[in-house]
Image (cartoon, rainbow, N blue to C red; front, side, top):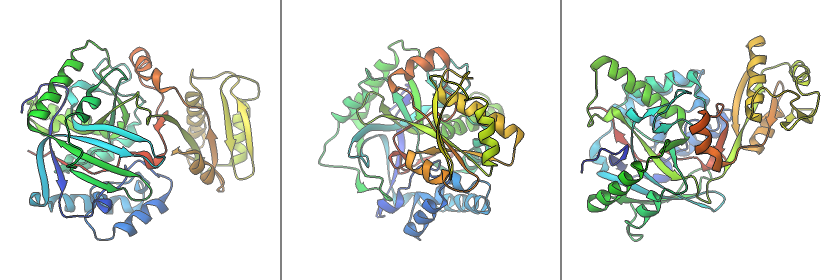
Length: 405
């Protein structure tokens, strides 16, 4: 099979004779302020084969576990025995039952990094949907630079009218799944099917037809933007070293799952903000100066002792999340010991905001149907604007792909 489409088939690896419910763990950028979640994962996995051995949870960044984890990743990747994997060239059609019972369908394949640019003024066919936080890229680039394999938690949107995923579902048999198991820690259920041979060729033709439709933005990053940005950064480094990179080079691609933004299972949740290690009353005094009047951008501020509704008097951004982030950035410039984190889920935000020295911010989200038009016209949303459901609905690591020649 040979393809010159932007989204294409890949050589995919699935481990054999292992407990996949222990193998598959949630995306590294989840539960970043909840170290207890990751401790529970470590305890559950114990010594079983697991993707936990190949990822750096962001909860570990800046701690003594960061260096330890990076060392473990290198060691584990070098020890991979390909005979322990089912390896095939094609796609995976994924059916994920989310914790709320809704079903999200997608297709796993490789996306061409030559067609991706995460800069704000990008006009590429693959676009970032949110501002990229540059500080989150280097650790991932370092891992990818020395990695033999990649594992994806990247999810990429196609617009409602795109039928690639529906058509992929028609190409598989429900009687012969590639995998079928319960995800750990309340993540729901996942089932996957191989698409290879003639069926993969048929899907590639449908992908090519979509990509030739003349759309300004063909693919928009739904989740895992920083992992994809790291893959792009590593690819760009390689281009500087060796010049143009062949269509067949594995580092030219990143494994991901495409999903349809129109699916009933897709809904956008705001990614809330929390400031920790701060003087709570000093922060609230500064905030009061910007929210002393009335306005359409309303926020709820939560601390250990206070829950208050506020409105930005003169918003600094057309989006509430942008005004909140601009305020926090300005505050941190004056109080660098304080820290900002991005929290998925209202309950988790409230729980964390009740700790000493913490201030949480709750606000409304955006409409998913506006995404492709907004990104085409204005570029990315402010960083960490939206999340597709709560933290446990994120993609779990499962498939692998070799990225060393």
